[in-house]
Image (cartoon, rainbow over all chains, first blue to last red; front, top):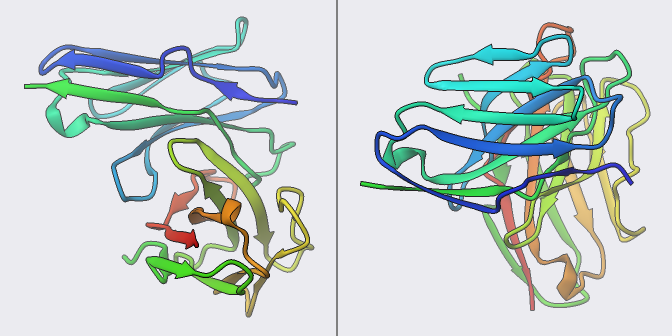
Length: 115
Length: 115
C-alpha cells in the first residue's frame, strides 16, 4: 500500500549545528505534506507544511524542501537548539482536491541535540 | 484560543471492558480526525468526520471500534471488549475546511492501557 517512510530513524547533532531530516513518500497523487514535532507525552505539534505546487517553503529556523521527481521531502532546522530534541514525523495527504482528509504518517526520526 | 482537548489523559482498563474516549475540537473546525499511535510508532489513521458527510471509517481496525460526533463538535471513540493490542495513545485532531489551510491540529492524546 501507499506509505511514507524516513531514511534515518535517529539523528544526533551538536547545539548550533543545522539538522536535516529526510522522508520518502510513494503516493505520487499526494498534494499536501506536513512536518510535525512530537515531544514525549504530548501530541504532535505543527511545524511547517507545503503543497505539491511548491518545492520550498521557509518558516522560522525551518525550511521544507519537496522534490516530486524523486518523491522526497526534507526538513531543515537551522541553528538547532536543545529544545528541538523530539521525534519528527512527516505526513502526506491525498485529498483529491479537498482541503481535508486523512494523513499518512512516516515512522518518525528521533532528533537529539547535545549542548 | 483553546486547542484540541481530550479526556481522559490516561485510561487503564481490564481486557474485555468497554472504553469511551472524548475529543473536543478547536471551535469552528468542522473536520475531526482520530489516529492511534502505538509505542515508538507513527500515527495510524482511524476515522474522520467532516460536517454532515458520512464519516470515513476506512482506518478502523475492527468492528469493536466505533466513533460518533454529536452536534458537529464533540466526538467519542468507543472501543468495545478491549484487547491488549488496543493499548496505545489515541490522538484526536481537527481542521478547517475553508481551503485556506489543511493543517490538522492535535490534542494531547489519551493513553489507553489494557491489562
